[in-house]
Image (cartoon, rainbow, N blue to C red; front, top):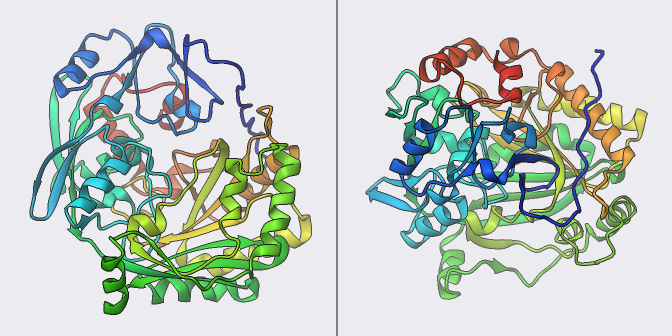
Length: 459
């Protein structure tokens, strides 16, 4: 497959003079600061939409790739929804939040109520609820899928300023569940909630020789599982979580419901982590030994089992500027694809400074979810920025090559991360692709909620 090489953008390290709005990683200036409006109520959101003559893009925590957020032309407006936040209402089995509420705030509110979402969290909780729905944020565990699959209804301000509600019986709901920010501005979301569960997560280090079958066993036999595969060392660090035993639950309660880390630790990952750190230091040239990129792998040293709620156990990401590629593959093909990656790795010996992240989810009902209609294994790849804002050449080559391998295997990319559009035939990957485009045309016939990225993707 002949694919043009992507240009992963350099990160700006210059002093921010306030004239431009950057995405979180500071590798894309997405709008002049004068083009930003920050509503705090639905009425102000409607005013922002109706008073603009140009096109509109939506942002919250700005954690997506810049091309998804940036304005198309002078006169366009960037609507910052992060001021639309807070709990709007609850009942026995649901909670309604403003669209710009951070996931961290949602998790905190639900935890205080003894409730949780019926979906595992993504690792970074600073993103907004509307942003999580727009991009398909997911966690891990075959008994759940994306955060969008925990949604009961969505309230949106449309391009003409009207307000529409979409519940699970609405024919357009599967489009709204993962809308890419092109359908309208989300003002409120009602989420299904369930009683909070305490989990014990067992951690281990095992050979990757049996990964093709072990991955399925870990996920079939446990409520949730996550793994980090270090191909250079042929080693996998795996977490498997089950509901805590009554004794473990009592211990957790006695400890004030704080995460319990067992005294017994394992150093089985230490030498592997040291090698990854050596590669990372060479690539990033960050001198602070406690720098965020280093902490993301240092935590695998001297690991121990833990007991806590789902957010304490799994929402443990350390946000640090990076290029992140994540591709979903049907779970029934996981063994084949892992074998392909092993052969490719042995043949090419790519340069890596972070392990391959493996997370599995159940099927999603969202038309554009990478998990749409099927259990899915997500392969995640990370390259961190160097101190001067550059990326290692070997790291970029690795990302380009491994994405091509997975695209050839029928992979579907995560929308909020980085991907090479020419690698994918969207209609063959997504059977409801044209249905999504039809809903978009109905809700936003003038394609006001769009930019060059959205035009190129959907038009």
